[in-house]
Image (tube, rainbow, N blue to C red; front, side):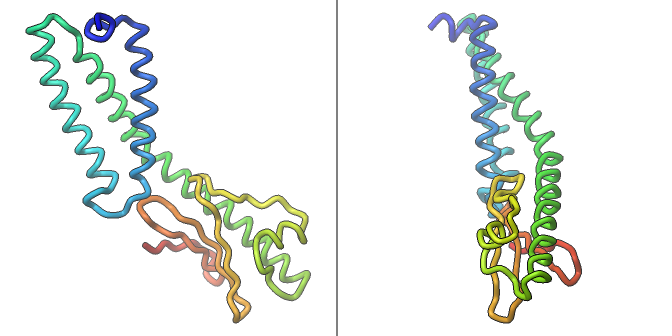
Length: 179
């Protein structure tokens, strides 16, 4: 118990690693939720408030008991603020990179149609017949989806953050999102 109430560097580093992993998974999990009540901004704000309240309580305990619990809360608050700060640029990069890779799939689908006169029935068929290695997953970690319609048209898309679905419009040559 002494290692926890009066932590040394090793204990704080170990806690920092575990805390960081937990917070990253927490943010990642709520990044795909759309509703405001349980969305990422609400959950991060709630967690920050809980950590700040915990910091105040731990400071009071530290003063009365001569412990150092406040360091755990300080580490977690700094990590949460860091994750919050870098999550948006990372998220934007992941979406843009996923779009870029999706356009590469579109180009291969269009080349397939020029060679064969029709679109492939699936991405697996495209991969096998065109002898190419298509990206299966986006930079976000979700799968690219492909659907061939009866009117010989197709759709390529992927699920993104906050419940958005991105789809490629081949006529306008751009991505659009729908929730």
